[in-house]
Length: 460
Figure (tube, rainbow, N blue to C red):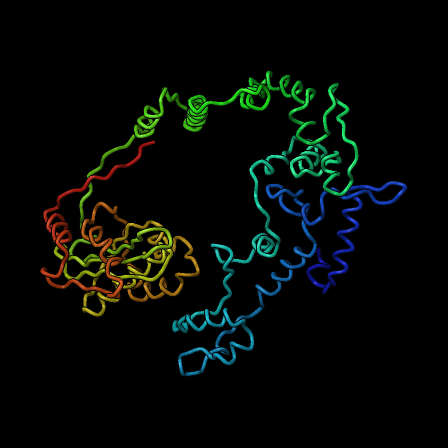
């Protein structure tokens, strides 16, 4: 491992080492090395992707090399800036970065705060480099399978697991497999009295010996191997009612196993009624809008999204201690991360407050995660780093942040889809009563009256 992380090793050395490992795995005879039924490029995949979980040496070398590159001793970005001009030096960036990455950097604003330059590892949410994430980044990724992921279990002997991988991938030395390699020989199964071609399906499923073994062990577990395949084994033609009934029985069986309760349905309509009658218990609570700090102005902001990776919008309202609105806004935001929308909505609300000359502002948010980040209790993701630092600068030190339930502010909830609905207006301000949407006016009146809203809370 030390040699891989410090030396430059040619690819031919990796291939020679892997060839030696493969020969050792499959063994050898007097005639030479045995045939490798599964290539080494398949075996180094994880078990859920059809491999044996081996690590490819070139991949290990790749992520160890990333460890050296990703964690430099010193990071200085000032050399890539035009001193005193406030923008990036594109000519210098082009000497070190690919074109697509250079465009990404040029699209980012130049940092203005006085802070230490640092490297962010984008593959991890906590932004710190890890060998595991680097390995998953450089390795070849195959198609995952639930069945293959259950082959390698700790109590199961390694030989049995390896045999199951060969069986599921069709890499056993049977006649039908040999035919795919060009060896066309007379085929006859030696385990059955009646002559039949030797194939994986016959030896392990449809043959007389295989059916007897499946029936013996299946009866011990209460599983019938013939009933689900009566059309194949007994020649019985399936009918739509029987197929629907089998699907219904399997569905109820899965639901009872998942929810640990008796379903008690005999028809699909009864099953739909059962699903609508949730077994969860809920408690009803009444919540109403209150100022975050008595005698102070309260800013409520929120973000919204029509769908995943769809159009997004932000909204907010600044209210006095009695609940009367002073200014509100709705905005169309061209971002796709819902958490970033929440952050941008708050930043936009604080900027509007500063522009309008409102001070002594307290903040209410319905996102516990964002409140924890701004209160320095949680670590913030790298893609909202700039916005979070600007919020700290505008909100004061320490910022007066409070969490509130979404149902407690009907005004911002009413403005949820307004910002998404006007993409031609970046920001829409509401400063006069006749400018507010009609539904928002109703929410303002209810907040001023102290009318509560209903919140349903799940009980344990």
